[in-house]
Amino acid sequence: MEEIFYRSNPWWEEDYIFEGKKRELYLKEIENYFLSKDIIFLTGLRRVGKTSILKSFISELLHVKKISPKDIFYISLDLLALEKLSITEILQEYRKLHKIASNQKIYLFLDEVTSKEHYSQELKNIYDLEDVKIFASSSSASILRDKNAYLTGRQRVIEVMPLNFEEYLDFKELKIKKSDEYLLESYFEEYMSDGGMPEYVLNGDISYLQNLIDNIIYKDIIAYHNIKNEQAVRDFYKLLMERSGKQLSLNKIANILEIGVDSAKRYLAYFEDTYLIYTIEKYGKLNERLKNPKKIYAGDVGLKNIVTGFRDKGAIFENLVFLKIKNLRPSYFYEGGIELDFMTQNKTLIEVKYKSTLNEKQQKLFDETKVDKKIVIDGYRAFLDMNKL
Image (cartoon, rainbow, N blue to C red; front, side, top):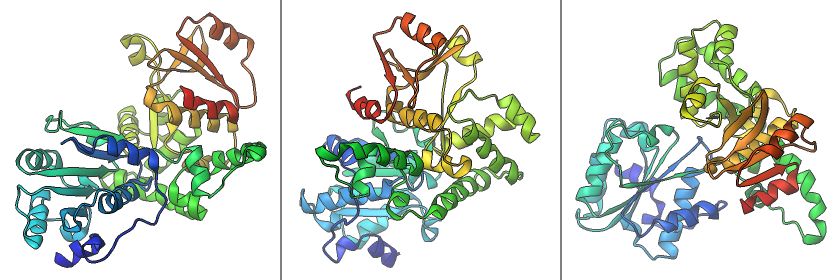
């Protein structure tokens, strides 16, 4: 146990500086909640960079905030050696190791916290009874569904997304001068192809993305939910990627795969839980949202392209726009058989066209719809201007 703790916390024995790429967007958001007692949860796709963000923040605690190294404890809770220990027991072992009383302030970093069955109740008890600032990560959206409300009013959830275009350029160490801005278009097309999974952007090994998909599907869906029909689950994902940006008929997918509709509904929920996909509802009243099919988007376009190939750039571009505006809680707009891409929660109507224009019927609906704001995003320059939304 002691050896595992020391391996996980190298700053206990030597100077520690995080040497990877920092994601300032998320470090600033963590900083905003640092002085509160709130538990900070990082959630998102596996390998999207949650652990790196935690460790880069630890580096800041050490070097900027001058926190004592022994008062910072990081541990990955999915380690096999810790399988039989609860979070409380692990924390007690750490306190015993450094002779730290429960009323002494510590900074606790728990990676993959949902691997412990009763994590929410344990975190509540630690939060209530000890002087501790808790940072935790999870690759499962289940962290957002605290059934017993143990953590209500005690948590801040930050979803870590794949790299945005600006981060992509930074990870590629591309600094574009004002005089060379014409180069942005070709780099943006590379971004549309590569997607934003940090390690892949850095190393370019395409087998990494395929292995990542396989690992998530097997570990987080097939094995976790004890599904016998493995091939159906894998084929289900392929069909989802083919339908990215389209309305999704679970009846059709069930027929294609020769599975029940109830099974298709479960599989869809499992994939959403892993952040491999997102779904959005039709804009409208509750009964309209419930009776109409959802639209689907990939959690990362690079992962989608592994399955479908780099084609249909319009669909890929729309997917990127969705990921950029996801925090605005978009729905799709559908009226009289005509669809427009997004209506955000703040009543902004958005139509996405990659190097193309709205057809006559779309233009008419777009013009006649009464909303606070309307935007057509028709290429990479309009995409970059979305920062103003």
